[in-house]
Length: 122
Image (tube, rainbow, N blue to C red; front, side, top):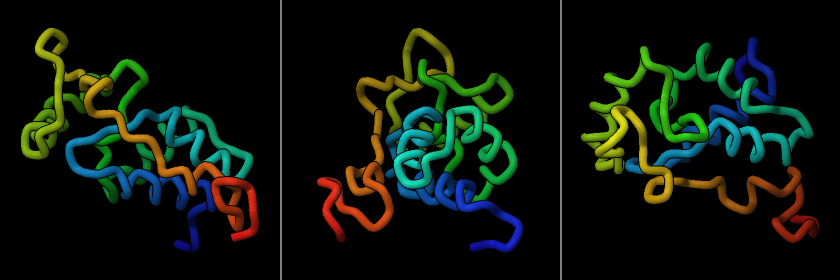
């Protein structure tokens, strides 16, 4: 773990780094995966962490619950979406089609650390 980062920060970045090209997830789903491991974390925490450390991971793959990004990030994200083949809305500029692109953290992420998805010792 990086000395000036919390466990929460490291876990958020770890989840984001696993999102495959062409797929996205939401701040809330990242928070849910991290919260299952730590008992802490909300979508706003994820947003703060991404604002600070997001350049280290594929930040454009984490969007709001409606599939959008903040206005100042949309143009840069669109270039990544085009390159990765991420489905974007033909009707709303800069919005990802979540029904086609949504990625959820694997089941093992939603189990507490040291347990498998069924809650048994790993």
